Image (cartoon, rainbow, N blue to C red; front, side, top):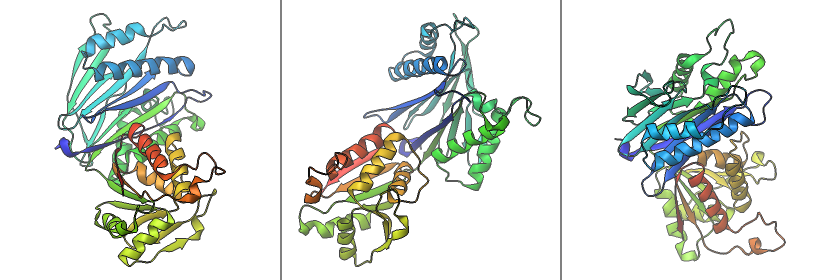
Length: 391
């Protein structure tokens, strides 16, 4: 069943109070051609710069070892041997959780000293089976290895111990929030909102953990990452008029026939669709904010925005990893794209001479270039499936 599934992966984190650098590291990559996804959450000893170095080294090495299909025990030993030794504690230490997902083959999860995996299916907590292995040269280091045959709507949650130990020593959580507390919180959220995104779930988990700390100040780095397996959420985005007016009808039909969320970026594009489909456009002037033009509404279309300015600002938000709460066009488009799995851009190739003016800011790129910029960040940073069609 996992062969047809898309996996949405998002993480959220807070630094330890008083630190500018997070001692946890979360990285992921997608293997071109195979759609294999590997993600690593590593927690370095302590917090701050030293912890950040340890976790980043561990995560980078783990990605390379897993991607090249190296044996896990020798790989873990190499990682442990390679880490710099803490001058205070005289040990080199970094924990990790690795999720290795191959469509059609399920997910393999490898943990070393991080809190155990949380697996949620059909609104219930699953107790996944695992095997334990020890390093012959590092007898105190134990690995847990899970093999999970994921199904649609499954969630996998991994975390650093800043989450499981949140509230440690308080009257209510003398032993910390622990894995059980986090799991119950996530279950309640999913039962109340079955389609909650990985982005929102990871953020709410970390925010709840922070709320358990004294004065809401984290005593350790906090990171949670969520893997949400589902049938892909599809979105189509039309921008720019077709090269020839003779393609206007096909342009509108492509949007009308699409099954999924529908977006139009650009006033001329919206006018073409409205004319060809016999629909009306209504502009919402209350959505003007931060220099972003207003959005508009049309029957059968989820979002209509201005073109180049909005697309450029959206690219900036996506590259910065921001999840804006505003209601302007760029914020709404950013959140819609992040919540989508498969995105199809339909790009009109008629040149708009207004955007060729050399006096315009450099950021005001022509439509095809800004679309390529969007596609790149969506594919590389968010592992989305992206297709571009020119008309």
